[in-house]
Image 1 (cartoon, rainbow, N blue to C red):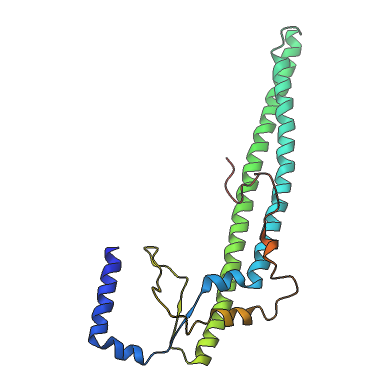
Image 2 (image 1 turned 180 degrees about the vertical axis):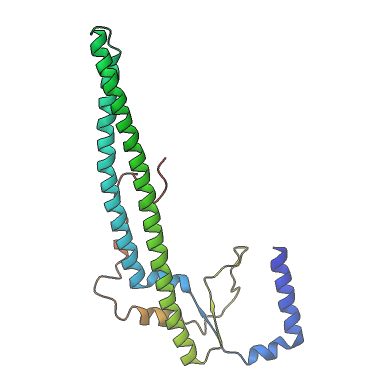
Length: 216
């Protein structure tokens, strides 16, 4: 906050030294990058695709967990047999050996599931980050074109925040806001149904990968 106050004071000092004359020569616009990003049909398509891939990973993991549960049940049965005094010592020893083998299988199951979750998480996160960067770059290209065509010297992101989580743009009368016109241009080629935000609703599922969280 102290740093923010210093910035404000510097801005005030700049204004006192002729900043108003400088501002008069500038044509400044605003643009809500967050709104445009969320409204862009390619963002919606990308989000739906990633959610679908996540659901497929959850289904695959569910099969692995079911197999592990069967191995765990078999392990418990073998342990009971190994401790059953009603059977011969030889039979108990056979059950004990089988239980040790089954325990090793169960340990492999748990490790395999954990590794699968980690791979799925990293893969989907990387894919999401890569796609986000591509979309932002594309949107920025459209903003640049609009700014040049409109003769704007600067375009401020009205959705941006400072390191103190304070809005960078504290006030705008909205007169030169490019958001709606750019969103319209971005979605001009949107395929039918691609702007349906209802498609973003995550389908019901069990908490397997826990929405890209590590397995616990």
